[in-house]
Length: 425
Image 1 (cartoon, rainbow, N blue to C red):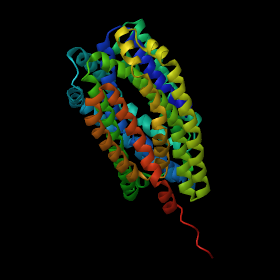
Image 2 (image 1 turned 180 degrees about the horizontal axis):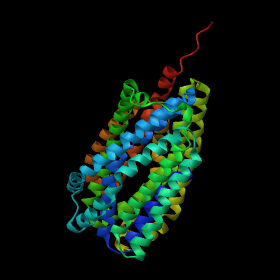
Image 3 (image 1 turned 30 degrees about the horizontal axis):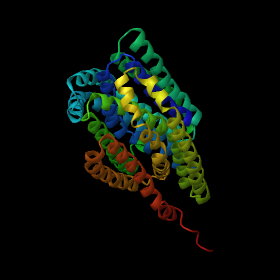
Image 4 (image 1 turned 60 degrees about the vertical axis):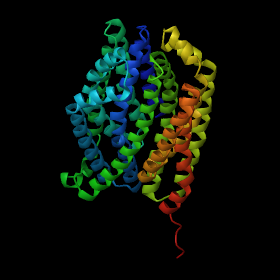
């Protein structure tokens, strides 16, 4: 799954490179703000993927094949319905997103073009969340890799072809995303559907079982709040960067690709933690749970350190690849160290998210995220006026660290409650 998730930041790098080669900082800013708008929409709804993974993993661990399939159908139906709702609300979403980011006129126009096209992919994107969640919950990492590679590979190829070869620019990048998500949804759904065990197929009464839906929606609610709070933090980061002018906004957008690469890289281990922790909870087997936590933390931290080292050494070369604007290059170089440290600052948050999602301890995730967001807001008010954009990056690092350490501090207590000691006979 690390390989699978790496295709997403690679896509972001290609999109940024395609738009960056047009030589207009406003287009880079438009892509960055458009990406934040979609992060707010799609990452807020990422509960479909996360909750599906946790519930399917627990059903898999307990050997309940019928419930695995019921979770899949519930998630696909909810995903498609949410996607249609996003389409209906798209004019309001576009207006609110641009208003919240408050960009300059040139950036606003670029953002509107990108968002108005890409939002067409909403139903397919959210169905893909449900499909991927099902595959990950069952531990079918190869299938997840193939699905993500299909979606993002199609997107990357079309971004280059439509954006540069046909000279569609930022509109071509958006249409590439729509096409990739649609192809992934059709092929991914067919892959899962024709491999379901027909002897364990649930009836519609089981799919719409009230207690199961209540549990799913409760889990979805907490993860949605957690995800929305996370995106508020990133939106505040972009908005504050926009106040420093289009060049600093573009430089921060380029540097955020450092974090996105590290984030999706570490998400592979977080996903392993989701599946393994969920299976251990479903099987009520504490040793497997503890081992999953130890291994994912060990490997995640090691690779985060290597990622930080890579960007400290090669960051300037990456910046030069992502944009041809000399002003943006010079500005981005000032903050390379902070951007490179995001991998180490955020590794514990990624791994703990994986464990808590798999165990379906969603309330704790929600509460610690809100606490970390409050810390981030307080640091923005104090650090940014004092040291400018350096303070913005320091606040982001503190936010990432607070998320991970707060969840790790309560891990032992939650595990003891989930796996009580066996009573002597």
